[in-house]
Length: 511
Image (cartoon, rainbow, N blue to C red; front, side, top):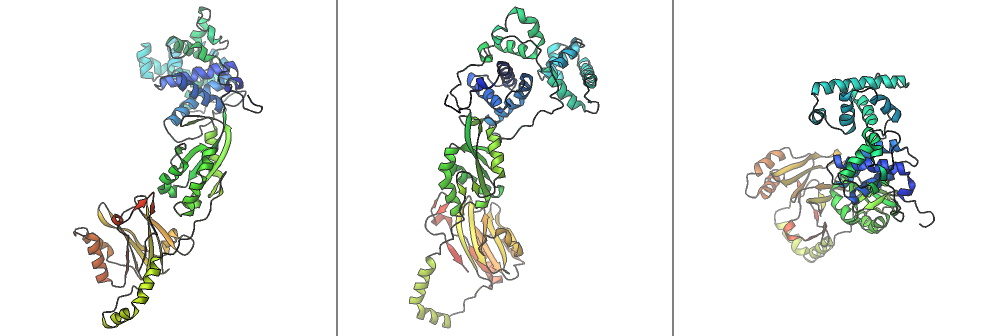
């Protein structure tokens, strides 16, 4: 190994810890119905050993191996990455003497409950079938075990009389799984010379049963140096998205790349190199106004861990997520503070319209004088529509005292999505005097008025029965309220979308 490189896991723990962890990991996989393949056993054991403290006691390491193996299976299944709780201090007091003292006073029924129910995790009904013992006798033995353990704890100076039965059961579970002293070498465990110890020791008994069943080999229980060159420390990046930005989840995931692993609803884990490579894409999402910069943060953490395909082993995954959640929004390690969004460029459409109007000025003036006067809305509104996921992101500007209504077409037909919005409009503020709202529908209309439209809801419901509901609704609204500003989204059928962006300038509609 190079100077300063982390030691291999076989070098970082004692042979007894290696054996104890391997037996418990393989047993937990077997009880979960998982086929114990060599690669699966190696990954699960590495995850446990990486997560254990240096110098840990073999019994403590074995007790923690069960929950850590279950956590490993959760990561393989794609469940959210979470920190598992530590074993309570008042349960860590148990040692082999407790088991020896308890077993010495048990009758055969109590011994079956201790070994099969508390040790192997069988329900009492299954113990009844396996051991051919009546269920009522088993329940009596279970209650007797609880009282015996309470007396043992009191004699040891530990007050457990106030503990509920559920916590006493945890204590019994720990006692039932504590190895007997004097375990032999794994390579010699099948010898008849050690049969009496194997029958009494949970660890050795499980090892022998799994060896004879072909689940593990004796050599699996002995630490090797084959992993001496395998790195067990990695630099991991974690990116955390604010729940309010969940609509950007697909775009963020695409920018982070195929190597990023989703470790929660809005959390991704990736290597430091992948984090740096994703920097330009993340900054582009923020600069283009697709992802608010105050809705994303991230961190890079180095610690014990190893990638196995799409699964990150070891505690560095949890550490990276917790550090990222402590970062200020808009800051990502290795990328710095994210840039503010670029201002929206003015649409050239208005300049072309202005030039055309100047060329036709005389005709326009004559038509305005001789023809009917155009009705001007009391509160004009200017809106810009940009295609977003399954809908529109609308940036608009209107008088501060204007009342805003938003109608969209859902599967039920025209629906009032937001009604009589005035002071509440602050929730949509972009900070530059404009407002931005996301509507998850393909057809949407913004209406602006001085005092609201009291009969809007009634007209919306009536329009659902019309052949062209939105056109009919527009006719009814403007006929009854000619000074209301009506701004509709563009027709998607005549636009081309590429990855959430509209080709050309986004349409700017002004009324």
